Length: 617
Image 1 (cartoon, rainbow, N blue to C red):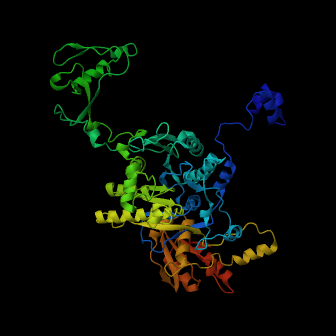
Image 2: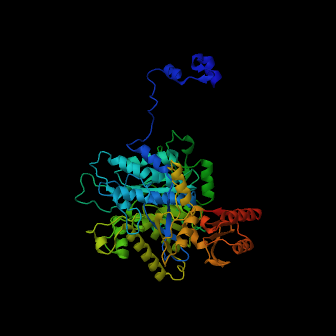
Image 3: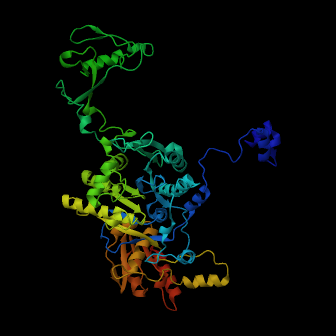
């Protein structure tokens, strides 16, 4: 390339390098400015980008009453931080994401700016606030995004951008995301998704008819639909066909007792004229009268003359009752067409439900007017039917009332699937005047949990033989159980303090009688090792090894991992070697006494010689 430029414009080459400034001069003054190009930009985009790069110092703390095994999980916590926590364990594993984020109508709230990098002490010094458990009270950072705000759209885009980016990381290569939105931010969301997922991965803008009637108080032209934007992570996504409805199946009958079974009729003419398709304008014989039958000049036959003769020989034409039609219809047999229908971008309420249906479903489970505008289960069932397989992992990090969890559990019951669902909901405090607060709920996450629990109880009562293992595990976003190395130590004294602090990596135990600190550390270490919070089901009950409590974890590759938080002894080493694990995880504080470093070094050497990995936290 440089050689070619040197021949045609030698002044552009200096010391065998391209002189960009001279190239710009050569292009002329009318060139596009270097800082001008096609993109979506808004106030705060740079700061929103920085949110993507931040790491998390949080973990997921399991509920003390969690079942021993659970197919689904509900996480209470701010969803951006939760998405960061999930990166290690769920990167590239989610088949489908559905979210119903704030529509930015001026009446909904969301978190901005997304700054959670402070330590607890820093936060308390700045605000003096903490919750009952001593954790960051991020609720105070939830703000009403008023339309009068000068950065009304920018604040919403800054909230969505890092969440969509981190969510994309979690999708499988054949994964897909569905995002509900209304007209307030539909245009901006489309451009934002084009940037995050790539415009080439846009699949559809589905229009869902959310109302069945126009309200008399609707200003101007009444809005009757929401948008559902659909994007794939890569072009490898394959949608499923939708099952035919009873109404669609009524089109197929066997009016002439054809041995091939039910069929539906289709036009035997095309929309082309005799001048566009002259070879398709020819006469055919009427089977009853024997007369020549010509197509209209503006709508010729669908097939060539030779193909027509094959159709006649195979009895694929229908001339009506008693062969009374002037022109034939084409018989399409139900057994010969694809097993289902191709989804379209228009979803009427008759097919997938409407807002009132969603309200009724929620009201029957947790009380009327408890949650505003929940999506109907049929809508989510349609999305799941299009985008998931029987063993797919589904994520919703704006879970709301938990409709997606109900839809997943009911679909599994219907088709025998084993889909797993992860719901994430911020414990946003409810208004004391709201119906939900009066009913005993204190946060939106309380509503989510109540609905999921009630759905499980309902399905267990109705189908006890099929729901014995149906359960949902509950987790709360919480500060890490381990100390975080501060990178701002700018003096020898500060560095010594850090080193002294890290004689033990774990924080001071904060467990309870119902949930020992070891249980919380165990859940966090599983996340850090990519097993996921739901990986807890692979853990057997803790066993005793030489007086120490050891957790045995069956890894996805069927190898064994041992985790121990108790003091190390030579007898423990013997038991570990006999167990033949692939990996051992211990705390630095397990090695105590004047010879702690020597004990650790010897253990590392011996296990390495046996091809057993050792991780010391």
